Image (cartoon, rainbow, N blue to C red; front, side, top):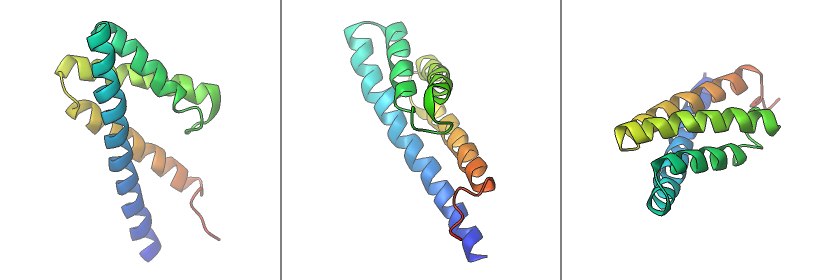
Length: 113
């Protein structure tokens, strides 16, 4: 039972912290820089590409994972553009990270024995 509580705690922490940091970087700082220099459409494209490249070693790893993350970056960026803030994109990102964490847990990626 302790293992289960620990894995749940780890999953929640990972999902919330990772999403918060990535949203602040990609749809926060980088979005603002790109949209001030060019426009919001360009910010959407630039941040989505950078988000994809940043996930080359994510799950799933490699080019396919990067393309998937880039497409998800378009979705998150569209939410950012549509709402004018990071809230909805962040909540969706937490959900995606929690799903990835559950998939990895189910496949035994965190087994220590």
